[in-house]
Length: 480
Image (tube, rainbow, N blue to C red; front, top):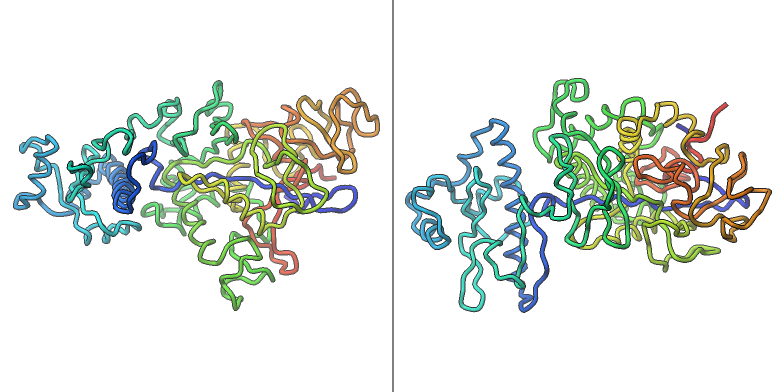
């Protein structure tokens, strides 16, 4: 695949954002909340956050137990001689005949599991039933609460894994993929599913699920005999993902590697805190990449914007003050550097999830998804997008939105024979369109992967004078 930034007729670089929603493990399987109404103390925040973190860990241990690993049941300490643990269990209605299924998790036990973010709470855990009980509890208005679900509605409204997917996402979970709602305000778009492209919305923005089968990690074709140890085995997870994309691996000279404003890697730079390259410090880049790999591994996929990121207005020059929108009929968010694109894309973060530009491996996984689920051939994905993309060698009907001539957008009903006749784009004519202007350029409910504008990614080029990488755009043009 030839990768370069699409340019308009005047040579101005046109760059749009592709937003990847990467769920944090804290919210992948646990709960959603309605907010704090009457109390906003740091103590309450710590209690709820740490309880959710532990619930996530217990869900993972339960998965290992169901897979046959009974050693996880011996984690923690026996509560036979722990009077406080037994009192707490009795208080919340657990019969003493069930005590043997619970274990005490001290801070040392929590630390040994490598869970980041738990500093205060200790727990009483039942892995078989996926129960998490606070050892000390949280006292409010004269009452002590030991579980999240026991907190009064309005103080905290929690729904556990069995009921969190109240808006019809749970029905699409399989052994290989587990789509999730990134937050309580999200819901599935009616009529979408894993077969045609599962879409969720927060009412303003739209994301499509990219399936990355969990089974690839145990498949010797991809793991080469070495599966990941767990969700923190980042090196092996990334290696297997690269093997899975196979012939679609399109990063010739590109790496998912941090760089500064001069194109220097972490080992080469004198300032690892420089954010002028890709909008992140070296440590932020590492943390974000590891979060992404862990999430893809545990959930069997990730969300990307259904449309190119746009705004309600179109600029004549760089204007980073516009609000990002991932929806149909918006003006592509162009005239922006990679660093600013990353900063802007992270602002879609709503607290329950993390948003960012895509890493290179994610772009390749999108192509793999379009091959496996969308039926596109390797050649269509790597050499010639004429039949499904919107590079200038393709013709298609502009159904929704506008197109631009010399950066001045006009309605698709205006007849401009040089570019469009009867709303149909003429072959070998480059035009810029609003987002989602033609359903013909949509595969698996993802619009405009090939053509229209290029997309910044968090990849480094091997050329320091121009280290930032753009995907899409003219990268899938027809080759002679």
